[in-house]
Image 1 (spheres, rainbow, N blue to C red):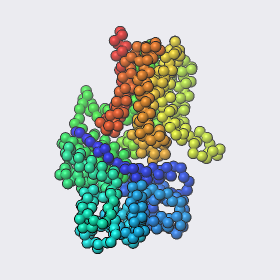
Image 2 (tube, helix red, strand yellow):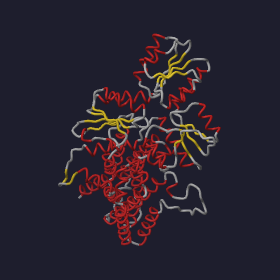
Image 3 (tube, one colour):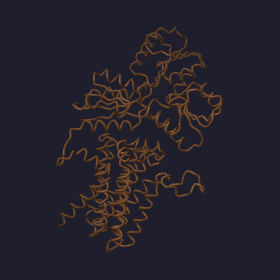
Image 4 (tube, rainbow, N blue to C red):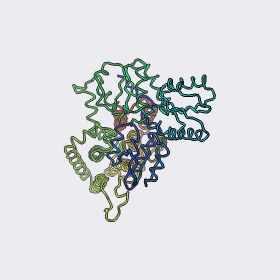
Length: 577
Protein backbone atom coordinates (compact mmCIF):
# COMPACT_ATOMS: atom_id res chain seq x y z
CA UNK A 1 0.00 0.00 0.00
CA UNK A 2 1.13 3.54 -0.76
CA UNK A 3 1.02 5.75 2.33
CA UNK A 4 1.29 9.53 1.96
CA UNK A 5 1.78 11.95 4.85
CA UNK A 6 0.63 15.49 4.12
CA UNK A 7 3.53 17.97 4.12
CA UNK A 8 1.59 20.24 6.46
CA UNK A 9 0.64 17.54 8.98
CA UNK A 10 1.47 18.19 12.63
CA UNK A 11 2.47 21.09 14.82
CA UNK A 12 2.08 24.53 13.36
CA UNK A 13 4.51 27.27 14.35
CA UNK A 14 2.31 28.62 17.15
CA UNK A 15 1.66 25.22 18.74
CA UNK A 16 5.32 24.19 18.48
CA UNK A 17 6.31 27.46 20.13
CA UNK A 18 3.81 26.94 22.97
CA UNK A 19 4.86 23.32 23.59
CA UNK A 20 8.57 24.17 23.41
CA UNK A 21 8.01 27.05 25.84
CA UNK A 22 6.25 24.95 28.46
CA UNK A 23 8.74 22.08 28.16
CA UNK A 24 11.71 24.43 28.41
CA UNK A 25 10.11 26.03 31.46
CA UNK A 26 9.51 22.64 33.11
CA UNK A 27 13.11 21.58 32.49
CA UNK A 28 14.74 24.81 33.66
CA UNK A 29 12.56 26.65 36.17
CA UNK A 30 12.08 25.87 39.82
CA UNK A 31 8.72 26.09 41.53
CA UNK A 32 5.25 25.00 40.44
CA UNK A 33 4.24 25.43 36.80
CA UNK A 34 0.72 25.34 35.37
CA UNK A 35 -1.18 26.44 32.27
CA UNK A 36 -4.25 28.63 32.26
CA UNK A 37 -6.62 26.48 30.26
CA UNK A 38 -5.44 23.54 28.10
CA UNK A 39 -2.23 24.62 26.36
CA UNK A 40 -3.36 23.14 23.02
CA UNK A 41 -6.16 20.89 21.79
CA UNK A 42 -4.44 17.53 21.95
CA UNK A 43 -5.12 14.92 24.66
CA UNK A 44 -1.73 13.17 24.37
CA UNK A 45 0.22 16.40 24.85
CA UNK A 46 -2.00 17.42 27.76
CA UNK A 47 -1.50 14.01 29.38
CA UNK A 48 2.28 14.20 29.12
CA UNK A 49 2.24 17.71 30.63
CA UNK A 50 0.17 16.33 33.49
CA UNK A 51 2.72 13.51 33.95
CA UNK A 52 5.48 16.15 34.13
CA UNK A 53 3.61 17.89 36.94
CA UNK A 54 2.16 20.72 34.83
CA UNK A 55 -1.56 20.90 35.68
CA UNK A 56 -4.26 22.95 33.97
CA UNK A 57 -6.11 25.60 35.96
CA UNK A 58 -9.46 26.87 34.72
CA UNK A 59 -10.06 29.49 37.41
CA UNK A 60 -7.74 32.27 38.56
CA UNK A 61 -7.02 31.90 42.29
CA UNK A 62 -6.84 34.83 44.66
CA UNK A 63 -3.22 33.99 45.39
CA UNK A 64 -1.11 32.32 42.73
CA UNK A 65 2.31 30.74 43.13
CA UNK A 66 5.02 29.90 40.61
CA UNK A 67 4.70 30.20 36.86
CA UNK A 68 1.59 30.11 34.70
CA UNK A 69 1.67 29.78 30.92
CA UNK A 70 -1.03 31.33 28.78
CA UNK A 71 -2.35 28.86 26.23
CA UNK A 72 -1.54 29.09 22.52
CA UNK A 73 -5.11 30.26 21.79
CA UNK A 74 -4.65 33.37 23.93
CA UNK A 75 -6.89 34.84 26.62
CA UNK A 76 -8.82 38.09 27.11
CA UNK A 77 -6.60 40.94 28.39
CA UNK A 78 -8.42 41.09 31.72
CA UNK A 79 -7.52 37.41 32.35
CA UNK A 80 -3.83 38.10 31.75
CA UNK A 81 -3.95 41.07 34.14
CA UNK A 82 -5.74 39.00 36.78
CA UNK A 83 -3.10 36.26 36.60
CA UNK A 84 -0.34 38.79 37.21
CA UNK A 85 -2.25 40.46 40.05
CA UNK A 86 -2.76 37.11 41.78
CA UNK A 87 1.01 36.67 42.04
CA UNK A 88 1.85 34.38 39.14
CA UNK A 89 4.92 34.83 36.98
CA UNK A 90 3.21 34.86 33.57
CA UNK A 91 4.72 33.42 30.40
CA UNK A 92 2.63 34.27 27.35
CA UNK A 93 2.53 31.30 24.94
CA UNK A 94 -0.11 32.85 22.71
CA UNK A 95 0.51 32.07 19.04
CA UNK A 96 2.06 35.13 17.30
CA UNK A 97 -0.59 34.85 14.56
CA UNK A 98 -3.33 35.11 17.22
CA UNK A 99 -1.54 38.06 18.82
CA UNK A 100 -1.62 39.80 15.45
CA UNK A 101 -5.44 39.47 15.31
CA UNK A 102 -5.74 40.63 18.93
CA UNK A 103 -3.79 43.79 18.07
CA UNK A 104 -5.92 44.53 15.01
CA UNK A 105 -9.13 44.27 17.05
CA UNK A 106 -7.69 46.32 19.90
CA UNK A 107 -6.40 49.06 17.58
CA UNK A 108 -9.73 49.57 15.87
CA UNK A 109 -11.79 49.15 19.05
CA UNK A 110 -10.02 52.22 20.44
CA UNK A 111 -11.29 54.11 17.37
CA UNK A 112 -14.86 52.94 18.00
CA UNK A 113 -14.99 50.23 15.31
CA UNK A 114 -17.12 47.17 15.91
CA UNK A 115 -15.32 43.85 15.41
CA UNK A 116 -17.15 41.09 13.55
CA UNK A 117 -15.27 37.90 14.46
CA UNK A 118 -15.91 34.93 12.20
CA UNK A 119 -15.34 31.85 14.32
CA UNK A 120 -16.64 29.26 16.75
CA UNK A 121 -18.33 31.09 19.61
CA UNK A 122 -17.08 28.75 22.34
CA UNK A 123 -13.54 28.37 21.01
CA UNK A 124 -10.93 29.76 23.45
CA UNK A 125 -9.19 31.75 20.70
CA UNK A 126 -12.43 33.50 19.79
CA UNK A 127 -13.24 34.19 23.45
CA UNK A 128 -9.81 35.78 23.80
CA UNK A 129 -10.18 37.83 20.60
CA UNK A 130 -13.57 39.12 21.70
CA UNK A 131 -11.99 40.39 24.91
CA UNK A 132 -9.86 42.82 22.88
CA UNK A 133 -12.97 44.42 21.35
CA UNK A 134 -13.98 45.86 24.74
CA UNK A 135 -17.72 45.34 24.25
CA UNK A 136 -17.75 46.07 20.51
CA UNK A 137 -17.20 42.47 19.42
CA UNK A 138 -19.72 40.29 17.59
CA UNK A 139 -18.99 36.59 17.06
CA UNK A 140 -20.75 34.95 14.11
CA UNK A 141 -20.61 31.30 13.13
CA UNK A 142 -22.72 31.38 9.96
CA UNK A 143 -23.36 33.75 7.08
CA UNK A 144 -26.96 34.10 8.27
CA UNK A 145 -25.73 35.38 11.64
CA UNK A 146 -23.55 37.93 9.86
CA UNK A 147 -26.50 39.11 7.78
CA UNK A 148 -28.62 39.47 10.92
CA UNK A 149 -26.22 41.99 12.48
CA UNK A 150 -27.19 45.67 12.35
CA UNK A 151 -25.39 47.90 9.88
CA UNK A 152 -22.50 49.62 11.64
CA UNK A 153 -21.02 52.98 10.72
CA UNK A 154 -17.58 51.55 11.25
CA UNK A 155 -16.62 47.88 11.53
CA UNK A 156 -13.87 45.45 10.85
CA UNK A 157 -14.14 41.76 9.94
CA UNK A 158 -11.57 39.24 11.13
CA UNK A 159 -11.53 35.46 11.31
CA UNK A 160 -10.43 32.90 13.83
CA UNK A 161 -6.96 31.85 12.66
CA UNK A 162 -8.10 28.25 12.08
CA UNK A 163 -11.38 29.12 10.33
CA UNK A 164 -12.47 27.57 7.04
CA UNK A 165 -10.94 29.53 4.16
CA UNK A 166 -13.94 28.81 1.94
CA UNK A 167 -16.45 30.07 4.51
CA UNK A 168 -14.46 33.22 5.25
CA UNK A 169 -14.27 34.00 1.54
CA UNK A 170 -18.09 33.83 1.40
CA UNK A 171 -18.33 36.28 4.31
CA UNK A 172 -15.90 38.72 2.68
CA UNK A 173 -17.79 38.58 -0.63
CA UNK A 174 -21.06 39.32 1.19
CA UNK A 175 -19.47 42.23 3.06
CA UNK A 176 -18.01 43.74 -0.12
CA UNK A 177 -21.49 43.80 -1.66
CA UNK A 178 -23.58 44.91 1.33
CA UNK A 179 -21.11 46.87 3.48
CA UNK A 180 -18.21 47.98 1.28
CA UNK A 181 -17.02 50.42 3.96
CA UNK A 182 -16.26 47.54 6.38
CA UNK A 183 -12.57 46.78 6.69
CA UNK A 184 -11.70 43.12 6.19
CA UNK A 185 -8.47 41.46 7.29
CA UNK A 186 -7.05 38.15 6.12
CA UNK A 187 -6.32 36.68 9.53
CA UNK A 188 -6.57 32.97 8.79
CA UNK A 189 -3.14 31.52 9.49
CA UNK A 190 -1.25 30.60 6.32
CA UNK A 191 -0.54 27.26 7.97
CA UNK A 192 -4.28 26.63 8.14
CA UNK A 193 -4.74 27.66 4.51
CA UNK A 194 -1.93 25.38 3.34
CA UNK A 195 -3.20 22.52 5.49
CA UNK A 196 -6.69 22.77 4.00
CA UNK A 197 -5.41 23.14 0.44
CA UNK A 198 -3.05 20.24 1.00
CA UNK A 199 -5.76 17.80 2.05
CA UNK A 200 -8.03 18.84 -0.84
CA UNK A 201 -5.19 18.11 -3.27
CA UNK A 202 -4.05 14.84 -1.66
CA UNK A 203 -7.59 13.49 -1.31
CA UNK A 204 -7.88 13.41 -5.11
CA UNK A 205 -4.98 10.94 -5.37
CA UNK A 206 -5.75 8.38 -2.63
CA UNK A 207 -8.50 5.94 -1.65
CA UNK A 208 -8.83 7.01 1.99
CA UNK A 209 -7.79 9.78 4.37
CA UNK A 210 -6.83 9.39 8.02
CA UNK A 211 -7.05 12.66 9.97
CA UNK A 212 -5.15 12.56 13.26
CA UNK A 213 -5.86 15.02 16.05
CA UNK A 214 -8.03 16.03 18.97
CA UNK A 215 -11.77 15.61 18.52
CA UNK A 216 -12.28 19.06 20.05
CA UNK A 217 -9.72 20.74 17.77
CA UNK A 218 -11.44 23.10 15.35
CA UNK A 219 -8.79 22.97 12.64
CA UNK A 220 -8.65 19.15 12.81
CA UNK A 221 -12.43 18.90 12.54
CA UNK A 222 -12.33 21.08 9.43
CA UNK A 223 -9.69 18.85 7.84
CA UNK A 224 -11.95 15.84 8.41
CA UNK A 225 -14.92 17.73 6.95
CA UNK A 226 -12.95 18.65 3.81
CA UNK A 227 -11.76 15.07 3.38
CA UNK A 228 -15.34 13.76 3.65
CA UNK A 229 -16.59 16.39 1.23
CA UNK A 230 -14.06 15.08 -1.30
CA UNK A 231 -16.00 11.82 -1.27
CA UNK A 232 -13.12 9.71 0.10
CA UNK A 233 -13.32 7.25 2.98
CA UNK A 234 -12.31 9.37 5.99
CA UNK A 235 -11.28 8.51 9.55
CA UNK A 236 -10.84 11.10 12.28
CA UNK A 237 -8.82 9.51 15.09
CA UNK A 238 -6.88 10.69 18.12
CA UNK A 239 -4.65 7.62 18.41
CA UNK A 240 -4.05 4.21 16.82
CA UNK A 241 -6.53 2.40 19.06
CA UNK A 242 -9.32 4.07 17.05
CA UNK A 243 -7.87 2.94 13.71
CA UNK A 244 -9.83 0.24 11.88
CA UNK A 245 -7.13 -1.41 9.77
CA UNK A 246 -9.62 -3.89 8.29
CA UNK A 247 -11.16 -1.02 6.31
CA UNK A 248 -7.77 0.01 4.95
CA UNK A 249 -6.22 -3.37 4.23
CA UNK A 250 -7.58 -3.82 0.72
CA UNK A 251 -6.98 -0.25 -0.45
CA UNK A 252 -4.17 0.83 -2.75
CA UNK A 253 -3.37 4.16 -1.12
CA UNK A 254 -4.10 6.17 2.00
CA UNK A 255 -3.19 9.71 3.09
CA UNK A 256 -2.41 10.80 6.64
CA UNK A 257 -2.90 14.38 7.71
CA UNK A 258 -3.03 15.90 11.16
CA UNK A 259 -4.24 18.97 12.95
CA UNK A 260 -1.98 21.78 14.08
CA UNK A 261 -1.89 20.40 17.64
CA UNK A 262 -0.92 16.84 16.75
CA UNK A 263 2.65 15.88 17.73
CA UNK A 264 4.99 14.04 15.39
CA UNK A 265 5.20 10.95 17.57
CA UNK A 266 1.45 10.35 17.16
CA UNK A 267 1.65 10.85 13.37
CA UNK A 268 4.62 8.45 13.17
CA UNK A 269 2.80 5.96 15.39
CA UNK A 270 -0.22 6.01 13.05
CA UNK A 271 2.07 5.67 10.03
CA UNK A 272 3.82 2.65 11.56
CA UNK A 273 0.49 1.05 12.47
CA UNK A 274 -0.83 1.40 8.91
CA UNK A 275 2.54 0.40 7.44
CA UNK A 276 2.73 -2.84 9.42
CA UNK A 277 -0.99 -3.59 9.59
CA UNK A 278 -1.68 -3.35 5.86
CA UNK A 279 1.57 -4.70 4.38
CA UNK A 280 1.24 -7.71 2.08
CA UNK A 281 3.50 -10.16 3.88
CA UNK A 282 6.60 -11.45 2.12
CA UNK A 283 8.68 -14.31 3.46
CA UNK A 284 12.37 -15.16 3.44
CA UNK A 285 13.00 -18.88 3.98
CA UNK A 286 9.54 -19.07 5.48
CA UNK A 287 10.16 -16.17 7.90
CA UNK A 288 7.95 -13.04 7.53
CA UNK A 289 10.19 -10.24 6.22
CA UNK A 290 8.48 -7.51 8.26
CA UNK A 291 8.88 -9.51 11.48
CA UNK A 292 12.51 -10.30 10.71
CA UNK A 293 13.27 -6.68 9.92
CA UNK A 294 11.55 -5.49 13.10
CA UNK A 295 13.36 -8.08 15.21
CA UNK A 296 16.77 -7.08 13.83
CA UNK A 297 16.08 -3.41 14.55
CA UNK A 298 14.49 -3.77 17.97
CA UNK A 299 17.18 -6.13 19.28
CA UNK A 300 19.98 -3.94 17.87
CA UNK A 301 21.31 -7.04 16.07
CA UNK A 302 21.27 -5.20 12.73
CA UNK A 303 23.10 -2.24 14.28
CA UNK A 304 25.71 -4.65 15.69
CA UNK A 305 26.15 -6.14 12.21
CA UNK A 306 26.69 -2.61 10.97
CA UNK A 307 29.42 -1.95 13.53
CA UNK A 308 31.23 -5.16 12.51
CA UNK A 309 30.91 -4.10 8.86
CA UNK A 310 32.29 -0.64 9.59
CA UNK A 311 35.20 -2.11 11.59
CA UNK A 312 36.01 -4.40 8.66
CA UNK A 313 35.86 -1.48 6.19
CA UNK A 314 38.16 0.65 8.40
CA UNK A 315 40.58 -2.29 8.69
CA UNK A 316 40.71 -2.73 4.92
CA UNK A 317 41.21 1.02 4.43
CA UNK A 318 44.22 0.87 6.77
CA UNK A 319 45.61 -2.29 5.18
CA UNK A 320 45.02 -4.34 8.34
CA UNK A 321 44.59 -8.07 7.73
CA UNK A 322 43.72 -9.39 11.22
CA UNK A 323 40.27 -7.79 11.22
CA UNK A 324 38.14 -10.69 12.53
CA UNK A 325 38.54 -10.29 16.31
CA UNK A 326 38.44 -6.46 16.25
CA UNK A 327 35.21 -6.64 14.20
CA UNK A 328 33.74 -9.09 16.74
CA UNK A 329 34.77 -6.79 19.61
CA UNK A 330 33.12 -3.82 17.88
CA UNK A 331 29.95 -5.82 17.29
CA UNK A 332 29.64 -7.00 20.91
CA UNK A 333 30.48 -3.58 22.37
CA UNK A 334 27.94 -1.76 20.22
CA UNK A 335 25.27 -4.40 20.87
CA UNK A 336 25.81 -4.17 24.62
CA UNK A 337 25.95 -0.38 24.89
CA UNK A 338 22.98 0.29 22.63
CA UNK A 339 20.77 -2.19 24.48
CA UNK A 340 21.65 -0.42 27.74
CA UNK A 341 21.05 2.93 26.08
CA UNK A 342 17.53 1.92 25.03
CA UNK A 343 16.81 0.41 28.43
CA UNK A 344 17.59 3.76 30.04
CA UNK A 345 15.82 5.79 27.33
CA UNK A 346 12.38 4.19 27.60
CA UNK A 347 10.87 7.51 28.75
CA UNK A 348 11.71 9.31 25.49
CA UNK A 349 11.04 6.20 23.39
CA UNK A 350 7.45 6.22 24.64
CA UNK A 351 6.97 9.30 22.47
CA UNK A 352 9.41 8.68 19.61
CA UNK A 353 8.86 4.93 19.16
CA UNK A 354 6.19 3.46 21.48
CA UNK A 355 6.60 -0.05 20.04
CA UNK A 356 10.32 -0.07 20.83
CA UNK A 357 9.66 1.25 24.34
CA UNK A 358 7.11 -1.51 24.90
CA UNK A 359 9.57 -4.13 23.58
CA UNK A 360 12.29 -3.03 25.99
CA UNK A 361 9.87 -2.69 28.88
CA UNK A 362 8.54 -6.24 28.39
CA UNK A 363 11.98 -7.84 27.90
CA UNK A 364 14.17 -5.63 30.06
CA UNK A 365 15.68 -8.38 32.24
CA UNK A 366 16.45 -10.72 29.35
CA UNK A 367 17.91 -7.84 27.32
CA UNK A 368 19.98 -6.62 30.27
CA UNK A 369 21.41 -10.14 30.77
CA UNK A 370 22.13 -10.39 27.06
CA UNK A 371 23.88 -7.01 27.08
CA UNK A 372 26.04 -7.93 30.09
CA UNK A 373 27.00 -11.23 28.49
CA UNK A 374 27.83 -9.62 25.14
CA UNK A 375 29.86 -6.91 26.82
CA UNK A 376 31.75 -9.46 28.90
CA UNK A 377 32.62 -11.62 25.89
CA UNK A 378 33.79 -8.51 24.05
CA UNK A 379 36.12 -7.65 26.93
CA UNK A 380 37.56 -11.18 26.92
CA UNK A 381 38.22 -10.97 23.18
CA UNK A 382 39.88 -7.58 23.65
CA UNK A 383 42.04 -9.06 26.44
CA UNK A 384 43.14 -11.82 24.07
CA UNK A 385 44.65 -9.06 21.91
CA UNK A 386 46.58 -7.49 24.75
CA UNK A 387 46.19 -5.61 28.01
CA UNK A 388 46.03 -2.17 26.37
CA UNK A 389 43.05 -2.96 24.05
CA UNK A 390 41.32 -4.52 27.08
CA UNK A 391 41.81 -1.39 29.21
CA UNK A 392 40.60 0.90 26.42
CA UNK A 393 37.42 -1.16 25.97
CA UNK A 394 36.90 -1.44 29.73
CA UNK A 395 37.10 2.33 30.21
CA UNK A 396 34.71 2.88 27.30
CA UNK A 397 32.27 0.32 28.71
CA UNK A 398 32.32 1.89 32.17
CA UNK A 399 31.81 5.34 30.63
CA UNK A 400 28.85 4.05 28.63
CA UNK A 401 27.26 2.41 31.68
CA UNK A 402 27.73 5.53 33.81
CA UNK A 403 26.33 7.92 31.19
CA UNK A 404 23.04 8.38 33.08
CA UNK A 405 24.55 8.15 36.57
CA UNK A 406 25.33 11.30 38.62
CA UNK A 407 29.09 11.88 38.51
CA UNK A 408 29.03 14.60 41.19
CA UNK A 409 27.32 13.73 44.51
CA UNK A 410 24.28 15.86 45.25
CA UNK A 411 25.72 17.07 48.56
CA UNK A 412 28.58 18.76 46.65
CA UNK A 413 26.59 20.08 43.70
CA UNK A 414 22.83 20.32 43.28
CA UNK A 415 22.90 22.01 39.89
CA UNK A 416 21.71 20.83 36.52
CA UNK A 417 24.88 19.25 35.11
CA UNK A 418 25.58 16.30 37.41
CA UNK A 419 25.49 13.52 34.75
CA UNK A 420 27.20 13.17 31.39
CA UNK A 421 23.74 13.03 29.80
CA UNK A 422 22.99 16.53 31.18
CA UNK A 423 25.68 18.07 28.95
CA UNK A 424 23.96 19.33 25.75
CA UNK A 425 24.84 17.22 22.72
CA UNK A 426 27.00 14.84 24.78
CA UNK A 427 25.14 11.69 23.70
CA UNK A 428 25.86 12.17 20.01
CA UNK A 429 29.51 13.12 20.50
CA UNK A 430 30.23 10.23 22.86
CA UNK A 431 28.50 7.69 20.62
CA UNK A 432 30.46 8.87 17.58
CA UNK A 433 33.77 8.85 19.51
CA UNK A 434 33.09 5.37 20.93
CA UNK A 435 32.25 3.94 17.51
CA UNK A 436 35.33 5.58 15.98
CA UNK A 437 37.47 4.01 18.71
CA UNK A 438 36.15 0.43 18.42
CA UNK A 439 35.87 0.37 14.62
CA UNK A 440 39.03 2.27 13.60
CA UNK A 441 41.44 2.67 16.53
CA UNK A 442 41.15 -0.79 18.10
CA UNK A 443 41.91 -2.63 14.81
CA UNK A 444 45.07 -0.50 14.49
CA UNK A 445 45.91 -1.00 18.16
CA UNK A 446 45.73 -4.79 17.85
CA UNK A 447 47.57 -4.85 14.53
CA UNK A 448 51.32 -5.56 14.27
CA UNK A 449 51.76 -2.30 12.34
CA UNK A 450 50.12 -0.26 15.14
CA UNK A 451 48.91 3.28 14.57
CA UNK A 452 49.74 4.65 11.14
CA UNK A 453 49.05 7.72 9.03
CA UNK A 454 45.79 6.06 7.92
CA UNK A 455 44.44 5.61 11.48
CA UNK A 456 43.31 9.18 12.08
CA UNK A 457 41.32 9.59 8.82
CA UNK A 458 39.83 6.12 9.38
CA UNK A 459 38.70 7.29 12.82
CA UNK A 460 37.30 10.47 11.23
CA UNK A 461 35.32 8.42 8.71
CA UNK A 462 33.83 6.06 11.31
CA UNK A 463 33.08 8.77 13.87
CA UNK A 464 31.72 11.11 11.19
CA UNK A 465 29.37 8.55 9.66
CA UNK A 466 28.07 7.46 13.07
CA UNK A 467 27.65 11.12 14.05
CA UNK A 468 25.55 11.63 10.90
CA UNK A 469 23.52 8.49 11.61
CA UNK A 470 22.88 9.43 15.26
CA UNK A 471 21.95 13.04 14.49
CA UNK A 472 19.63 11.83 11.71
CA UNK A 473 17.74 9.82 14.33
CA UNK A 474 17.86 12.80 16.70
CA UNK A 475 16.08 14.89 14.04
CA UNK A 476 13.35 12.24 13.85
CA UNK A 477 13.11 12.13 17.66
CA UNK A 478 13.18 15.86 18.43
CA UNK A 479 9.80 16.13 20.10
CA UNK A 480 10.25 13.11 22.35
CA UNK A 481 13.76 14.24 23.35
CA UNK A 482 12.50 17.70 24.20
CA UNK A 483 9.75 16.23 26.37
CA UNK A 484 12.26 14.41 28.58
CA UNK A 485 14.71 17.33 28.54
CA UNK A 486 17.37 15.73 26.32
CA UNK A 487 19.29 18.52 24.57
CA UNK A 488 20.39 16.97 21.28
CA UNK A 489 22.04 18.87 18.43
CA UNK A 490 18.77 19.42 16.49
CA UNK A 491 17.17 20.88 19.64
CA UNK A 492 20.15 23.12 20.32
CA UNK A 493 20.79 24.26 16.74
CA UNK A 494 17.41 23.69 15.08
CA UNK A 495 16.65 20.98 12.55
CA UNK A 496 17.41 23.07 9.44
CA UNK A 497 20.86 24.16 10.60
CA UNK A 498 21.59 20.61 11.77
CA UNK A 499 20.71 19.19 8.35
CA UNK A 500 23.08 21.69 6.69
CA UNK A 501 25.89 20.60 9.01
CA UNK A 502 25.23 16.93 8.22
CA UNK A 503 25.30 17.59 4.49
CA UNK A 504 28.62 19.43 4.75
CA UNK A 505 30.05 16.62 6.88
CA UNK A 506 28.98 13.89 4.44
CA UNK A 507 30.38 15.81 1.46
CA UNK A 508 33.69 16.27 3.32
CA UNK A 509 33.92 12.54 4.05
CA UNK A 510 33.05 11.67 0.44
CA UNK A 511 35.90 13.90 -0.79
CA UNK A 512 38.35 12.70 1.89
CA UNK A 513 38.13 9.01 0.92
CA UNK A 514 39.40 9.12 -2.69
CA UNK A 515 41.91 11.87 -1.84
CA UNK A 516 43.38 9.75 0.96
CA UNK A 517 43.71 6.81 -1.43
CA UNK A 518 45.25 9.04 -4.10
CA UNK A 519 47.95 10.20 -1.65
CA UNK A 520 48.63 6.65 -0.48
CA UNK A 521 47.19 7.17 3.01
CA UNK A 522 44.36 4.66 2.45
CA UNK A 523 44.34 1.56 0.32
CA UNK A 524 42.53 1.71 -3.03
CA UNK A 525 39.23 1.01 -1.24
CA UNK A 526 38.85 4.76 -0.73
CA UNK A 527 38.27 5.18 -4.48
CA UNK A 528 35.06 3.15 -4.10
CA UNK A 529 33.99 3.72 -0.49
CA UNK A 530 33.09 7.36 -1.18
CA UNK A 531 29.75 5.91 -2.28
CA UNK A 532 29.06 5.18 1.40
CA UNK A 533 28.67 8.84 2.63
CA UNK A 534 27.08 9.84 -0.69
CA UNK A 535 24.31 7.28 -0.17
CA UNK A 536 23.65 8.65 3.31
CA UNK A 537 23.53 12.15 1.81
CA UNK A 538 20.97 10.94 -0.74
CA UNK A 539 18.83 9.38 1.99
CA UNK A 540 18.92 12.58 4.04
CA UNK A 541 17.86 14.53 0.96
CA UNK A 542 15.08 12.02 0.21
CA UNK A 543 13.77 12.45 3.75
CA UNK A 544 13.84 16.23 3.39
CA UNK A 545 11.84 15.98 0.16
CA UNK A 546 9.50 13.49 1.88
CA UNK A 547 10.26 10.75 -0.65
CA UNK A 548 10.99 8.55 2.39
CA UNK A 549 8.79 8.82 5.49
CA UNK A 550 9.61 8.20 9.14
CA UNK A 551 8.91 4.58 10.02
CA UNK A 552 10.44 1.13 10.08
CA UNK A 553 11.50 1.41 6.44
CA UNK A 554 13.47 4.62 7.03
CA UNK A 555 15.08 3.23 10.20
CA UNK A 556 16.15 0.11 8.31
CA UNK A 557 17.61 2.17 5.46
CA UNK A 558 19.62 4.36 7.84
CA UNK A 559 21.12 1.33 9.61
CA UNK A 560 21.76 -0.37 6.26
CA UNK A 561 24.39 2.25 5.43
CA UNK A 562 26.63 0.77 8.10
CA UNK A 563 26.26 -2.69 6.60
CA UNK A 564 26.87 -1.17 3.15
CA UNK A 565 30.40 -0.12 4.17
CA UNK A 566 31.31 -3.75 4.85
CA UNK A 567 29.69 -5.00 1.66
CA UNK A 568 31.67 -2.47 -0.42
CA UNK A 569 34.92 -3.39 1.38
CA UNK A 570 34.29 -7.13 0.89
CA UNK A 571 33.50 -6.67 -2.81
CA UNK A 572 36.70 -4.65 -3.29
CA UNK A 573 38.78 -7.28 -1.46
CA UNK A 574 37.31 -10.14 -3.53
CA UNK A 575 37.93 -8.28 -6.78
CA UNK A 576 41.59 -7.88 -5.86
CA UNK A 577 41.73 -11.61 -5.15
